[in-house]
Image (cartoon, rainbow, N blue to C red; front, top):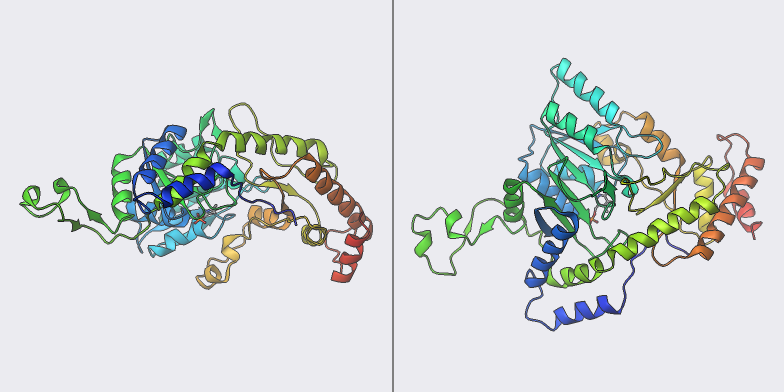
Length: 409
Ligand SMILES: *Cc1c(COP(=O)(O)O)cnc(C)c1O
């Protein structure tokens, strides 16, 4: 099976991890500091806090923004569940924002309409909005910034997919338009630390709170302590100021992250090349291809997402032929957990996106030969399906699908 995405680990990565294993520090030592500095240099962000994963990074954002049970947090409907769960960890009410039916990114006009409606009808406005750069294609950040300023909410960019993506020529990661940007370093993402994530911000106060909360809420800085004689206390003395968590990254993970960051431009170049190759190889008449890059607005191409009729059938045929197609994502409001909380209104753009979108393989370890095979299987499957089931509503049995798959060379 060709997976839709997978990590790329080379000898340098292995040696970097081995050196750390032989060093004095396994947890939060010099490599974590170096990795945070590396992320700041790469994105031009002022502060970076490395975390145990992006889920904990998102939770830290909510805590640092004092999100609580009285608050609403509005989240892109199409994302991994973690984008919404972070608000629930703080007891907040989640409302879902509909997405553009072709990109899956939140629809800024629909968000604007929700905000106007809430204001006019004296309903709660969001304390924070979580915008997801789906597949690595940045959201309309300038528009979002205008709404943020007009309605006074915090803006979190869930950039789990978007390391290396650009918006107006600037790399995603600097909070020019938002308050905090979150990265994920899960193995399927652009670079990996196995588990790992980061919060990036130019806001000193948020950075400070995130750093405190990601390490139990404990400070070792006498200037922050409550004890009046803090400055003359012995070195062992520390104070817990808030209820924090242990959401730190280890030096082993950071060593891997540093080694991976040395290759990030190579990773991105390859992903962009593969995306351009797919445009040549895929049959435009049979499917809708993703929005192409333009000058200064480049996706990181974490996911290559096409849109087709008979999506589920195509998914099954591809899997039977060894192509690891995947679905990103089921609208979060459809999850039983959120249904139980009565967040059940289906959203038009999200429903369309979910029904039609298919992720096909794109990662460092595939080449044009693999892509040609994927393209040929897809074209064959779509032609056969259109002949057998001309109506998008027509369903085929599993047996019929297997016959179609097995008739493809
Ligand atoms: C992967 C992902 C996360 C969670 O990342 P982890 O590092 O696995 O916690 C959150 N949001 C989005 C959009 C993701 O793709």
